[in-house]
Length: 223
Image (cartoon, rainbow, N blue to C red; front, top):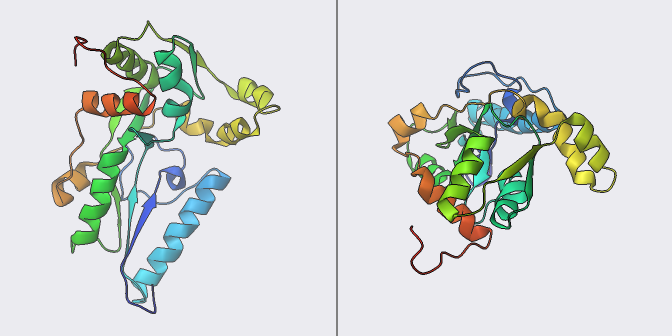
């Protein structure tokens, strides 16, 4: 990057902010409270230092938990397929506090817009997001697909620790409970105002997520 003069558009997430009371905006400092957050913050701060030293042009697009046909997230792994099958769905966190969700297509659109805009460099941008509790998001997903009334189970620290014995990846969620057990609301006002990228309608996002989970709308079924 420094040798070629290429501009660097990074894709990041919200881990580096740590615990935030109130909407998460791009001007908040990096204040990680997890190992994953430390890694994300260091990546950005190193890139920003290179930018400020004139060695590179960098910007970062930060996204929330992914939704979409190709997304991998707590919703697509533990909820979407299970709801469609009428099975118990699980979520590592509180079910009724606002959480933020980014459509993978909107994230891609934001990356492209940031790469093309002269005002984007030397700062971060937030991909558009919808802020909804996971229970409300799950119920809307079920209504849209005609699935049975969803059964949603909360995985707290004890449950995650116990299940991690057989599925070690679940242990990785423990240090992130500060985000999923408390309101986690993303503000993308600046992205919408400056870059012109606005969030896709939620029903379209959930329809894409359902297709990714194997859902096929039957003839005559309402869209």
